[in-house]
Length: 74
Image (tube, rainbow, N blue to C red; front, side):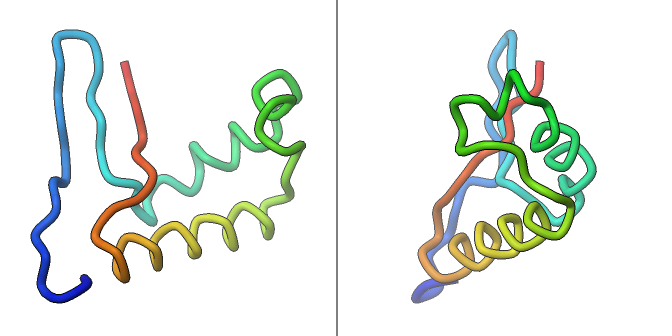
């Protein structure tokens, strides 16, 4: 993490649970990345290898900058 900055790992509301993206999100992310309706506005479909690479980039971003993408679950 950049300069020892502390980051928020999770945020919950009455409706949603937001968590920092994690390596364990790969399966859910892979399911999203092969859904044509979801990916129509998110850059197109991605293979499992492309999704794994995308996830690795997002995890590295969190480590370097202390912020990044979140996963929202209802």
